[in-house]
Image (tube, helix red, strand yellow):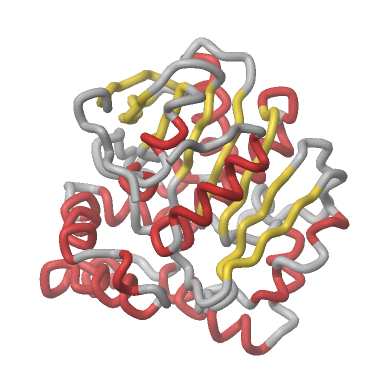
Length: 292
């Protein structure tokens, strides 16, 4: 696995959509933009950043509300149109017309929506363990998926989820990485502590939960999605406790040029559990040859 190469990794801030976002960047060339999920931050992509910086300007952003990015306080500040606008304007603010866009978990949901709303800004799309919104809706026909997604209902409550998840030094982070990973040895105690530190920043936990409090809005779960013309790769950990593997199936109905790669014995934290394999699939899709 690759070192972050901290001598060339740069931490920067940028203004987009009325807020300030923090991101890390390395490399030069076409823009390769990474979006993390819950309850993470840019560090999710620590194994991808230095590898792909050989070919691209890699940017791994802290989504609004997370880590060092601004944390608006209203629930409505985390509605999908705002999240999409963040990323669309970020691409432009970085000096690019388009990018290769990679998203995991909530970052995947945002990436799907950016590609749908602004296909001209996305050259290629990569999604890791986040179903297409139409497949996610269809998945609720399954009692198993209802059970797996029960936490979403709990997150709709005011203040109580914040209280419980902050208890015992944000111990839910330990539980999340332990219970939702198969290759647990790939995520070290130091990695888990990094995620705890990020979510413990003032306002970060509430902001992260506010994403879920907008989940059922019609802006995200709209009834009709046009067929996506952006070439798309989906990388799917088959043993994800959050999503049934069947949710990856049928995505080709919504994407013209669709590629699917499964990873066996892999849980939810795909880019962290099997980074070398993820990097191989990503490089293959982006048309670059990795060295070493």
